[in-house]
Image 1 (spheres, rainbow, N blue to C red):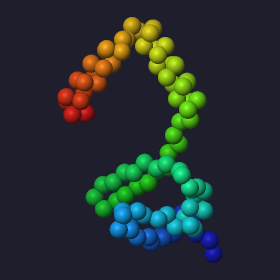
Image 2 (cartoon, rainbow, N blue to C red):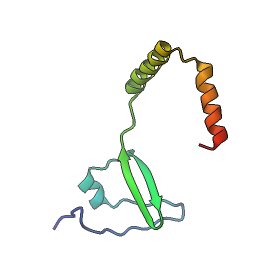
Image 3 (cartoon, rainbow, N blue to C red):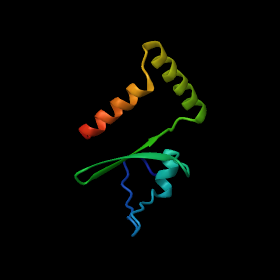
Length: 92
């Protein structure tokens, strides 16, 4: 009988704080070595969410879009740095 999403699989945390995702769960979800996860936690619950990071090409496209957006609206580098500094002072 195979593992389904409703099955509970137990695992342990190592002395280094590492938690193994058991093979059956990795196979069920198609998780491969090197994948990136966002980690959410509240009270006694931890949630791992697989995330896809943008490729270098995707980042280049986004950067070009941001530069063009700022140019069209007259936003200068100093404006951005000032806004970042203000937010950091607020503790955001």
